[in-house]
Length: 195
Ligand code: 5GP
View 1: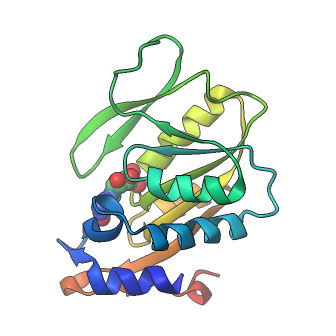
View 2: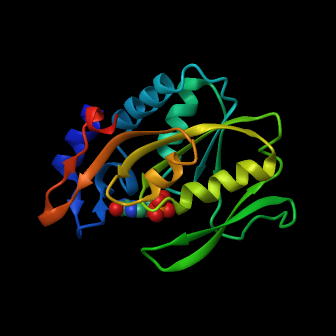
């Protein structure tokens, strides 16, 4: 998605060969116009699916997920990372390992908001090693819901999550796919290189 790639080039900060900071439009301050375009693009790419619910993870997945939900006319549920859920036993839960923080966290979704008749689209801000996405997929499985695929705002294609999950036959749509961030320079993988 051209507007997103332009924004990454203009405002993204490469912190290392593997970490991109996008605090000015996605992870801290949020650009609503760009989020709307992102929501529209996800809605377009998954237009042929009978989606009933979008599932994401707090906090940075919420903005793009809500925009997609608004345009697709479906509710958005976010998995919580904290254990503040009042109904502790009434949840689907999965472990998510963070390579960057080197810690495992439990994520949880109340059973009130995900059911076996739901058709679920997952949305998240980044795809790196795939742990967050795998945790969300596990929650969809526990709910017995149908899973149509994942919409990712920024995939770091040089990390292995995307390949690993696509090899399981899962559909992943990334709006920007970064091939390399060597020497502070972001290079995108072009669509034609992906096919
Ligand atoms: P994964 O589980 O795929 O390894 O990582 C995905 C999660 O880690 C995302 O939800 C995102 O919050 C975070 N993440 C991974 N890589 C980056 C990065 O380069 N920049 C930022 N800002 N977050 C990242």
